[in-house]
Length: 211
Image 1 (cartoon, one colour):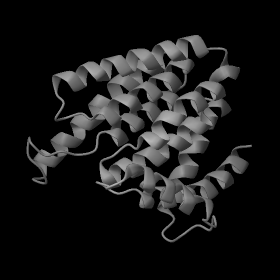
Image 2: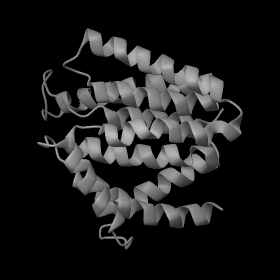
Image 3: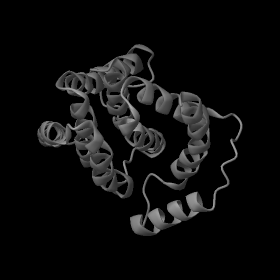
């Protein structure tokens, strides 16, 4: 099963590559951009490109999450990989991917029997990040708040321990990256960077640690 998921992950990684490249930092028309992005994905032939970074990362994430957390979390892993790639390139988390992922993730989590806890976890983490956004709107975007709800949904379904690791892990990883920028002279205290990938890396850690 894991070998099959690895193969599917390699193929899916090419679509992630296409999707990530179709979004820009500041589009004039987000709806037109979204239509063009998904049209390009539909027309894409899933042949791995070189170097196959997107393909290998997507496959690794899917296999790790399926192995450690279970098959119900595979879609969340795939959506998270795509969002991390887009945010890292553009400093954006497109609603056209984040918002539809809510019902999809909720449906995939039904077999876990923990949907009520998942919904509560999603609401709680979104509320927490919403509060952080109100306190420091220049450091955090609304896209991060919406992503937080999705992360809370997936991780709380696994356990409250996983939810806590995801909630704290994203903040810790983001802080460590900020310190690294300062130490290496590549940034200052005012340097802005996409926070979504660190939130998602924290979520991946939580899911891989299991229950």
